[in-house]
Image (cartoon, rainbow, N blue to C red; front, side):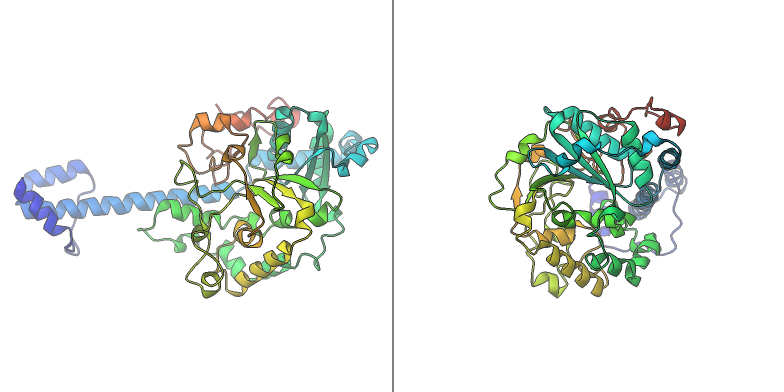
Amino acid sequence: MVNLYKILDQLNSEEIPPGLKLPESFSEFLSEMKNNQYDAKSFAIRLKATMENMDREVKRSRLAEQLHKHFAATAIPKGLYCLSLRLTDEYSSNAHARKQLPPPEFLPLLSDNSYYHFIVATDNILAASVVVTSAVRSSLKPEKVVFHVITDKKTYPGMHSWFALNPVSPAIVEVKGVHQFDWLTRENVPVLEAIENHQGVRNHYHGKHMVASNASENPRFFASKLQARSPKYISLLNHLRIYLPELFPNLNKVVFLDDDVVIQHDLSPLWEIDLSGKVNGAVETCKGEDRWVMSKRFKTYFNFSHPLVANNLDPHECAWAYGMNIFDLNAWRKTNIRDTYHYWVKENLKSNLTLWKLGTLPPALIAFRGNVHPIDPSWHMLGLGYQEKTDLDSVSKAAVIHYNGQCKPWLEIGYKHLQPFWTKHVNYSNDFVRNCHILEPQ
């Protein structure tokens, strides 16, 4: 046995002979060993070769799994597509689906700063309904809650229909399409045109995704790279948060929510947090027990081999999370955050996406530098869309849980033990939901 250990140790740095035919299973390996009665060195060589081959196969399988998850995550499930179509049809045929939101007597409240104003921008009707419903259910003063739901022109009729036919009284809901904001013109949003017309961006989304990987790559990091290829990153809806001060000129403070969150506790205390003159109240993502979810620093997002990045940023600076942010719009209006954001997005495009992969967080990390006030991590728990081992007890205690990552709770690839926190806010008996065969996961 001692000799075998020595041989294995020596083999550790040796190359396996090329063309060596290897068994395809352990039983085949065992049978071959018995039949050929190999000496210790031959046995060790074949053992090493077999183990290395199996390791490559496992990694290839895991990379393929991540690729399939990526395609599943970027596709629209039939049920959600059906829901949007049926509600759009309802908008054209049913006057109740077209009724004004909110009713005329409540319009002044849309700019009343004594209310709690939430903003969510999405083209996913079911997800929007969960965000709004969970927030209203969790609020201690739902009559003081105002939701501003923003969607694209295509989804606007269906989104309006949903909230017109399914009111969340006593809260107030406004639904607006991006086409209804006079400020959102090409002149004011130069980033979008630059992204849409950039050849590198088109290649980024329509190129061969598997080329970006190799068999030795960590599947988790490959998953992160694929996540950066999500088509949402070239959507105006995803960049909309950088324009909040202009879109809501009469509001002082707002909470911006992503569409893949669930609110579990009253969020009104967020408005009472002293941001110390800062613009953005956010949870930092470089400290925490989950080393995969809460280990994000600037080096996680940026390419520090690029001189523009290396000369301007600190790789060890702590990152923070989008998805649940309290924004002081008055303080924001005194800054150049938007222009800084535009500048860095354009520089990344000029550099053929080599400063960072696409996404709204990296340029925001730069634009908001010096303007972020850390808030307690219990306000915003991340990672439910990519960390399967998320602690359930911690999930139940968090004020907002965030399914960031590929495994959204409305997808088949969603983690079954984490889905109930989301599905309990879906009305599966709703006629539109039922007729589109959107079923509660078992």
